[in-house]
Length: 174
Image (cartoon, rainbow, N blue to C red):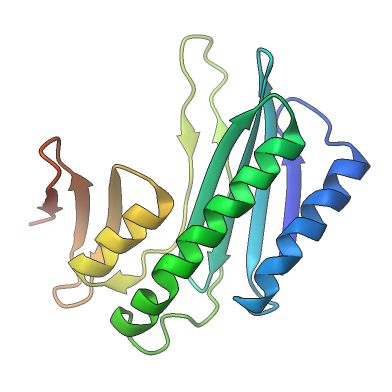
């Protein structure tokens, strides 16, 4: 697994980097060597925030944890990722078409607008053709409230989202 560790407005100590790499090695049993993991460390007031995003062939697993120390946040994030992977690995293999777990190039550049009032986070990644059900699964894996995708049948761009009533919605491009 390729691991990229960076600090947002901070420098990550070498000892923490080594600990993160050691903890993430346990995921090698689930993924191949071409899998990418991005770890972001940041501090907001007195709270340490650690975010881990694992990209496995276009499927992303994500966990973000807050704690008083980075070590505690790391332990919680690794446990959360492991639960996600175990819970969804079989379902992903059954539902996702053949070749969907093939490694793809992902451009995960984060750009931040320096406006003092709010922050705009820009991410770009290729849209993998998938069914609505696969898009909902991917949205839930990421822990987001919406997910944009290309419909595998119509080749149109769509957005699935979680409704307040607990159901899901679909917006399609006409």
